[in-house]
Amino acid sequence: MIDISIKVTKLDGTEATYAVTPKVQVEFERHFKIGIGKAFGNNDIQMQYLYWLAWCASKHAGAGPKPFDSWLDEVASVDADDEGGSPLDGTA
Image 1 (cartoon, one colour):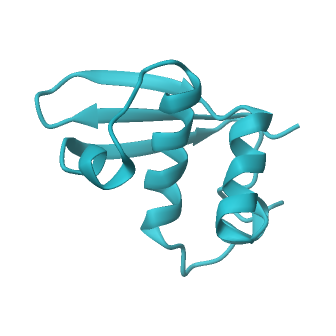
Image 2 (spheres, rainbow, N blue to C red):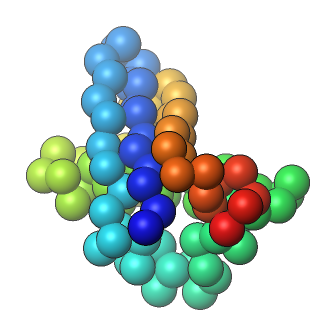
C-alpha cells in the first residue's frame, strides 16, 4: 500500500494535511494517464502532479476547494510525506 499525505500551506498561513487515499491515487492516474509511481519516480517530476494531487486529496477530504487553477492562487506550498518510501522517492 502506498501511504502518502500532503500538507498544504496557504498564502494566509493556514495549513492542512490530507491523506492521498486509493481513490485519489486512481483519480490521479486516470486524469494524467500515468502511474503514480512513474509520475513521481524520476528526476523530472512535473510540479503540476504534486499540486493536483494535493488539490484532489483536499477535495476528497471534504475541504471543498475551488476549481484547480483558482485554488493554486491561494497556495504558498505543498509538501508530500511518503511514509512507505514510494512512490515519491522513486522506489515504486
